[in-house]
Length: 271
Image 1 (spheres, one colour):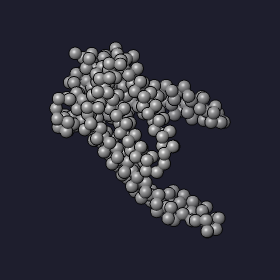
Image 2 (cartoon, one colour):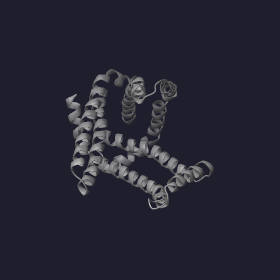
Image 3 (tube, rainbow, N blue to C red):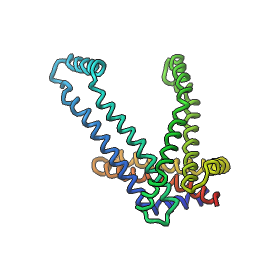
Image 4 (cartoon, rainbow, N blue to C red):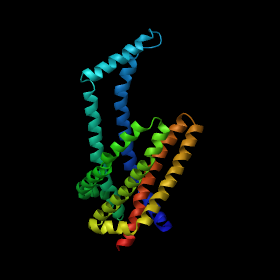
Protein backbone atom coordinates (compact mmCIF):
# COMPACT_ATOMS: atom_id res chain seq x y z
CA UNK A 1 0.00 0.00 0.00
CA UNK A 2 2.83 2.41 0.81
CA UNK A 3 4.26 1.77 -2.65
CA UNK A 4 0.98 2.84 -4.26
CA UNK A 5 0.84 5.94 -2.05
CA UNK A 6 4.39 6.90 -2.97
CA UNK A 7 3.90 6.28 -6.70
CA UNK A 8 0.58 8.12 -6.63
CA UNK A 9 2.15 11.14 -4.94
CA UNK A 10 4.99 11.14 -7.46
CA UNK A 11 2.48 11.05 -10.31
CA UNK A 12 0.44 13.84 -8.72
CA UNK A 13 3.38 16.20 -8.28
CA UNK A 14 4.47 15.59 -11.88
CA UNK A 15 1.09 16.81 -13.19
CA UNK A 16 1.37 20.50 -12.31
CA UNK A 17 -0.66 21.39 -15.41
CA UNK A 18 -3.63 19.44 -14.06
CA UNK A 19 -3.37 21.14 -10.68
CA UNK A 20 -3.26 24.55 -12.36
CA UNK A 21 -6.29 23.82 -14.57
CA UNK A 22 -8.33 22.45 -11.66
CA UNK A 23 -7.39 25.40 -9.45
CA UNK A 24 -8.38 27.90 -12.15
CA UNK A 25 -11.67 26.05 -12.62
CA UNK A 26 -12.51 26.14 -8.90
CA UNK A 27 -11.38 29.77 -8.61
CA UNK A 28 -13.55 30.84 -11.56
CA UNK A 29 -16.49 28.87 -10.20
CA UNK A 30 -16.15 30.42 -6.75
CA UNK A 31 -15.79 33.91 -8.25
CA UNK A 32 -18.98 33.49 -10.32
CA UNK A 33 -20.89 32.27 -7.28
CA UNK A 34 -19.59 35.24 -5.30
CA UNK A 35 -20.83 37.64 -7.97
CA UNK A 36 -24.19 35.87 -8.02
CA UNK A 37 -24.63 36.04 -4.24
CA UNK A 38 -23.45 39.66 -4.22
CA UNK A 39 -26.01 40.61 -6.87
CA UNK A 40 -28.75 39.18 -4.64
CA UNK A 41 -27.61 40.21 -1.15
CA UNK A 42 -26.26 43.73 -1.71
CA UNK A 43 -29.54 45.22 -3.07
CA UNK A 44 -31.38 43.65 -0.14
CA UNK A 45 -28.94 45.11 2.38
CA UNK A 46 -29.36 48.58 0.84
CA UNK A 47 -33.10 48.34 1.45
CA UNK A 48 -32.84 46.82 4.93
CA UNK A 49 -34.07 49.36 7.54
CA UNK A 50 -31.39 50.66 9.86
CA UNK A 51 -31.52 51.17 13.63
CA UNK A 52 -32.56 54.81 13.24
CA UNK A 53 -36.02 53.73 12.00
CA UNK A 54 -38.93 52.50 14.08
CA UNK A 55 -38.64 48.97 15.56
CA UNK A 56 -41.54 47.79 13.41
CA UNK A 57 -39.73 48.72 10.17
CA UNK A 58 -37.70 45.50 10.12
CA UNK A 59 -40.86 43.42 10.62
CA UNK A 60 -42.52 45.31 7.77
CA UNK A 61 -39.45 44.63 5.59
CA UNK A 62 -39.62 40.89 6.34
CA UNK A 63 -43.37 40.79 5.68
CA UNK A 64 -42.89 42.58 2.37
CA UNK A 65 -40.12 40.17 1.40
CA UNK A 66 -42.25 37.14 2.25
CA UNK A 67 -45.16 38.54 0.22
CA UNK A 68 -42.99 39.21 -2.84
CA UNK A 69 -41.44 35.73 -2.67
CA UNK A 70 -44.77 33.94 -2.31
CA UNK A 71 -47.02 36.07 -4.53
CA UNK A 72 -44.75 37.31 -7.33
CA UNK A 73 -42.19 35.82 -9.72
CA UNK A 74 -39.27 37.87 -8.33
CA UNK A 75 -37.39 34.71 -7.32
CA UNK A 76 -37.78 32.95 -10.68
CA UNK A 77 -34.84 34.72 -12.30
CA UNK A 78 -32.50 33.80 -9.46
CA UNK A 79 -33.76 30.21 -9.38
CA UNK A 80 -33.18 29.82 -13.12
CA UNK A 81 -29.68 31.27 -12.76
CA UNK A 82 -28.95 28.87 -9.90
CA UNK A 83 -30.26 25.98 -12.00
CA UNK A 84 -28.01 27.10 -14.86
CA UNK A 85 -25.01 27.07 -12.49
CA UNK A 86 -25.86 23.53 -11.39
CA UNK A 87 -26.31 22.37 -15.00
CA UNK A 88 -22.98 23.93 -16.02
CA UNK A 89 -21.27 22.24 -13.10
CA UNK A 90 -22.77 18.87 -14.03
CA UNK A 91 -21.58 19.33 -17.61
CA UNK A 92 -18.05 20.51 -16.85
CA UNK A 93 -17.19 18.11 -14.01
CA UNK A 94 -17.19 14.88 -16.11
CA UNK A 95 -15.29 16.64 -18.90
CA UNK A 96 -12.56 17.68 -16.46
CA UNK A 97 -12.51 14.15 -15.04
CA UNK A 98 -12.01 12.79 -18.56
CA UNK A 99 -9.02 15.07 -19.06
CA UNK A 100 -7.56 14.14 -15.66
CA UNK A 101 -7.87 10.37 -16.11
CA UNK A 102 -6.51 10.44 -19.65
CA UNK A 103 -3.58 12.62 -18.58
CA UNK A 104 -2.62 10.25 -15.77
CA UNK A 105 -2.88 7.22 -18.06
CA UNK A 106 -0.87 8.85 -20.88
CA UNK A 107 1.86 10.63 -18.96
CA UNK A 108 4.24 10.38 -21.94
CA UNK A 109 2.21 12.89 -23.99
CA UNK A 110 2.33 16.68 -23.87
CA UNK A 111 0.42 17.92 -20.81
CA UNK A 112 -1.98 20.27 -22.58
CA UNK A 113 -2.55 17.93 -25.53
CA UNK A 114 -3.34 14.87 -23.44
CA UNK A 115 -5.80 16.82 -21.29
CA UNK A 116 -7.77 18.08 -24.32
CA UNK A 117 -7.47 14.69 -26.01
CA UNK A 118 -8.98 13.08 -22.93
CA UNK A 119 -11.94 15.45 -23.07
CA UNK A 120 -12.48 14.65 -26.76
CA UNK A 121 -12.17 10.88 -26.41
CA UNK A 122 -13.68 10.24 -22.97
CA UNK A 123 -15.98 13.21 -22.39
CA UNK A 124 -19.17 11.48 -23.57
CA UNK A 125 -18.78 8.19 -21.65
CA UNK A 126 -17.59 10.02 -18.54
CA UNK A 127 -20.69 12.21 -18.70
CA UNK A 128 -22.80 9.06 -18.76
CA UNK A 129 -20.89 7.61 -15.79
CA UNK A 130 -21.42 10.88 -13.91
CA UNK A 131 -25.18 10.77 -14.45
CA UNK A 132 -25.36 7.13 -13.35
CA UNK A 133 -23.27 7.85 -10.26
CA UNK A 134 -25.47 10.81 -9.34
CA UNK A 135 -28.62 8.71 -9.78
CA UNK A 136 -27.22 5.88 -7.64
CA UNK A 137 -26.05 8.36 -5.00
CA UNK A 138 -29.46 10.00 -4.70
CA UNK A 139 -31.53 6.80 -5.03
CA UNK A 140 -31.27 5.71 -1.33
CA UNK A 141 -32.75 9.05 -0.26
CA UNK A 142 -36.11 7.78 -1.55
CA UNK A 143 -36.09 5.16 1.23
CA UNK A 144 -34.26 7.28 3.81
CA UNK A 145 -36.73 10.17 3.67
CA UNK A 146 -39.62 8.25 5.33
CA UNK A 147 -37.19 7.00 8.00
CA UNK A 148 -36.01 10.56 8.71
CA UNK A 149 -39.57 11.88 8.74
CA UNK A 150 -40.70 9.18 11.19
CA UNK A 151 -37.71 9.84 13.47
CA UNK A 152 -38.36 13.59 13.35
CA UNK A 153 -41.95 13.08 14.51
CA UNK A 154 -40.97 10.56 17.18
CA UNK A 155 -38.04 12.35 18.85
CA UNK A 156 -38.52 15.71 20.53
CA UNK A 157 -34.91 16.90 20.79
CA UNK A 158 -32.00 17.07 18.39
CA UNK A 159 -29.77 14.75 20.44
CA UNK A 160 -32.15 11.79 20.37
CA UNK A 161 -32.99 12.54 16.73
CA UNK A 162 -29.31 12.52 15.80
CA UNK A 163 -28.69 9.26 17.66
CA UNK A 164 -31.67 7.64 15.94
CA UNK A 165 -30.50 8.71 12.48
CA UNK A 166 -26.78 8.12 13.08
CA UNK A 167 -26.72 4.47 11.85
CA UNK A 168 -28.62 5.43 8.69
CA UNK A 169 -26.35 8.41 8.03
CA UNK A 170 -23.24 6.27 8.60
CA UNK A 171 -24.56 3.60 6.22
CA UNK A 172 -25.31 6.23 3.57
CA UNK A 173 -21.84 7.78 3.91
CA UNK A 174 -20.24 4.32 3.58
CA UNK A 175 -22.40 3.60 0.54
CA UNK A 176 -21.37 6.88 -1.10
CA UNK A 177 -17.70 6.23 -0.28
CA UNK A 178 -17.71 2.76 -1.88
CA UNK A 179 -19.76 3.97 -4.84
CA UNK A 180 -17.25 6.73 -5.56
CA UNK A 181 -14.35 4.27 -5.42
CA UNK A 182 -16.25 1.89 -7.68
CA UNK A 183 -16.75 4.56 -10.32
CA UNK A 184 -13.10 5.58 -10.09
CA UNK A 185 -12.24 2.04 -11.21
CA UNK A 186 -14.90 2.00 -13.91
CA UNK A 187 -13.44 5.22 -15.31
CA UNK A 188 -9.89 3.91 -15.01
CA UNK A 189 -10.98 0.84 -16.96
CA UNK A 190 -12.63 2.94 -19.65
CA UNK A 191 -9.47 5.06 -19.94
CA UNK A 192 -7.39 1.89 -20.36
CA UNK A 193 -9.97 0.54 -22.86
CA UNK A 194 -10.91 -2.34 -20.56
CA UNK A 195 -14.44 -3.58 -20.02
CA UNK A 196 -16.55 -2.44 -17.07
CA UNK A 197 -16.80 -6.06 -15.92
CA UNK A 198 -13.02 -6.39 -15.69
CA UNK A 199 -12.79 -3.12 -13.75
CA UNK A 200 -15.51 -4.20 -11.30
CA UNK A 201 -13.88 -7.59 -10.71
CA UNK A 202 -10.55 -5.90 -10.00
CA UNK A 203 -12.30 -3.46 -7.68
CA UNK A 204 -13.95 -6.25 -5.68
CA UNK A 205 -10.77 -8.32 -5.53
CA UNK A 206 -8.58 -5.45 -4.30
CA UNK A 207 -11.25 -3.69 -2.20
CA UNK A 208 -9.33 -3.84 1.14
CA UNK A 209 -6.25 -2.20 -0.40
CA UNK A 210 -8.37 0.29 -2.36
CA UNK A 211 -10.35 1.35 0.72
CA UNK A 212 -7.20 1.56 2.87
CA UNK A 213 -5.52 3.83 0.32
CA UNK A 214 -8.54 6.12 0.12
CA UNK A 215 -8.96 6.29 3.91
CA UNK A 216 -5.26 7.06 4.39
CA UNK A 217 -5.42 9.99 1.98
CA UNK A 218 -8.66 11.20 3.60
CA UNK A 219 -6.94 11.12 7.01
CA UNK A 220 -3.97 13.09 5.67
CA UNK A 221 -6.34 15.57 4.04
CA UNK A 222 -8.22 15.97 7.32
CA UNK A 223 -4.98 16.65 9.18
CA UNK A 224 -4.00 19.27 6.60
CA UNK A 225 -7.44 20.87 6.88
CA UNK A 226 -7.19 21.04 10.68
CA UNK A 227 -3.72 22.60 10.43
CA UNK A 228 -4.94 25.19 7.92
CA UNK A 229 -7.94 26.11 10.06
CA UNK A 230 -5.74 26.47 13.14
CA UNK A 231 -3.31 28.69 11.24
CA UNK A 232 -6.14 30.87 9.90
CA UNK A 233 -7.34 31.45 13.46
CA UNK A 234 -3.88 32.62 14.50
CA UNK A 235 -3.22 34.75 11.43
CA UNK A 236 -5.59 37.43 10.20
CA UNK A 237 -5.91 39.70 7.20
CA UNK A 238 -4.01 39.10 3.98
CA UNK A 239 -2.01 36.20 5.45
CA UNK A 240 -5.18 34.23 6.15
CA UNK A 241 -6.48 34.98 2.63
CA UNK A 242 -3.26 33.77 0.99
CA UNK A 243 -3.29 30.66 3.18
CA UNK A 244 -6.87 29.93 2.16
CA UNK A 245 -6.03 30.12 -1.54
CA UNK A 246 -2.97 27.92 -1.04
CA UNK A 247 -5.09 25.40 0.83
CA UNK A 248 -7.37 25.08 -2.22
CA UNK A 249 -4.32 23.88 -4.17
CA UNK A 250 -3.44 21.43 -1.38
CA UNK A 251 -7.01 20.15 -1.34
CA UNK A 252 -6.89 19.59 -5.11
CA UNK A 253 -3.56 17.82 -4.68
CA UNK A 254 -5.17 15.33 -2.28
CA UNK A 255 -8.04 14.72 -4.71
CA UNK A 256 -5.63 14.12 -7.57
CA UNK A 257 -3.48 11.94 -5.32
CA UNK A 258 -6.50 9.71 -4.63
CA UNK A 259 -7.03 9.08 -8.34
CA UNK A 260 -3.30 8.63 -9.04
CA UNK A 261 -2.83 6.12 -6.20
CA UNK A 262 -5.83 4.09 -7.37
CA UNK A 263 -4.48 4.24 -10.92
CA UNK A 264 -1.26 2.56 -9.80
CA UNK A 265 -3.29 -0.19 -8.11
CA UNK A 266 -5.29 -0.68 -11.31
CA UNK A 267 -2.25 -0.56 -13.60
CA UNK A 268 -0.34 -3.02 -11.44
CA UNK A 269 -3.19 -5.56 -11.40
CA UNK A 270 -4.30 -5.10 -15.02
CA UNK A 271 -0.92 -6.05 -16.49
